[in-house]
Length: 166
Image (cartoon, rainbow, N blue to C red; front, side, top):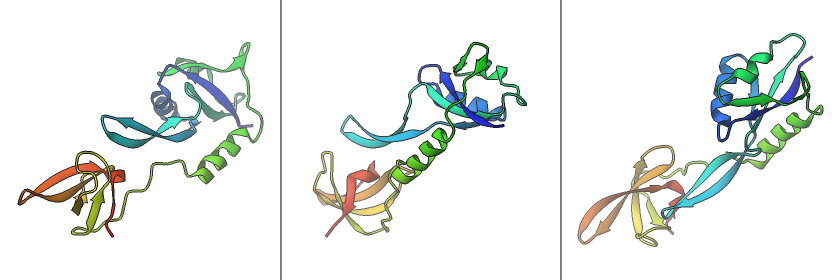
């Protein structure tokens, strides 16, 4: 019978361990929490592990080879008592999955601005200036056009740093 087990990872290696465990065919879950990070006048929302250095894997220890987990890149060890892994209480991981999806702790959705739409810049040296939205530069950044000193200047900023004008 498949059950969930805790895996202790190396420091800041949750993503690496998840990748390599999935590559070996294991079902892996690493709950994440959205946190706001400020650095160099930039504010961004990043997903961090809810339990640093831990993730969960679902397996049937009687039918699946589980010893390979301890030798996986990024993994410190499978948590257990003696020679056998210790299963987590039934329903614990499923409850975490439900709460994570209910909380909506993902990155904020990208804005839906249209080219030419007027926006207000909310941070940085151009704070409170009105600009025209040009395009999404990538998944997190937008390009806007500012009218400064009789010229149009292209500025790229994080999408959370602008709002609709009006």
